[in-house]
Image 1 (cartoon, rainbow, N blue to C red):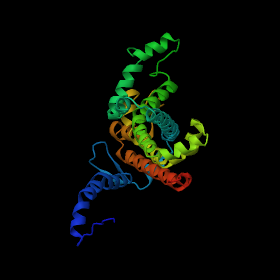
Image 2 (tube, one colour):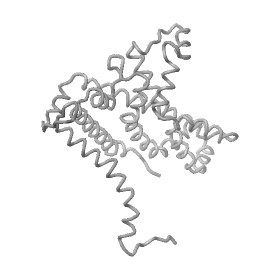
Image 3 (cartoon, helix red, strand yellow):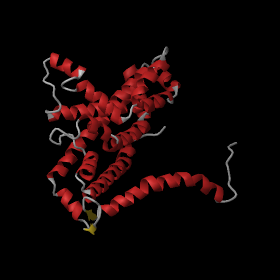
Image 4 (spheres, helix red, strand yellow):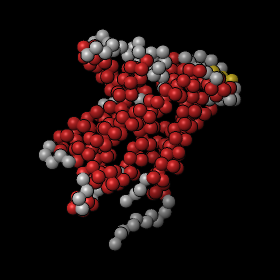
Length: 294
């Protein structure tokens, strides 16, 4: 018989919820409200005077070719990062799930990259592929590849995509492995008895049962690519060369901190927040229809 906890009053449940509500309000809702307010204002570089300008900051944004270009860069970057982080994560999880001896060692090694902060991951990839001192850059030149991501925009985009995806593979691997281990072995044994091959068992049984996990990770990886990759880009390319890797979140920081355009930067953050909310809503509205929960 299931036992349920019943509170005699509202005071104790409210006290339990209060810390989380306080954190959410202080660190999420209050900054969002501040950004929305600042997006309707224009300040001088020293913050001494503020003028209400309404939607002028937003109109200026969409009249800026550099800002429109950041949309295309961000779309390519986020899609590539999500794909390159999800596919290897699933592959590694499937391979580790079959390991009998030393499985704990494999899991520990594969989870290590997730413990590295995005900024540190960016520094590591920058040193490895630096045209002057990078070990892997020297190897590429030895293979006849003219590698210099500091001057070649496609190489810079490829490098930040690989660096950001590498950082996220461990996170996806952990959730995919947990999903694989939650699948009842009896289902796989029954299909094996029926003569289904390993590949057929994966595509007809395992992969559909991983649909909830895949859907969750798709949403998380899109949000990660939009927000948490700032440290990678800042330490590897700083948005260059020629703004080739200046995604939306980096442009928000650059225009606000370096350009001192606080109103325009706040307007960009509001637009970015609206984009992420819209993408997440679309994923829940349409993609979740194809997700089958066991």
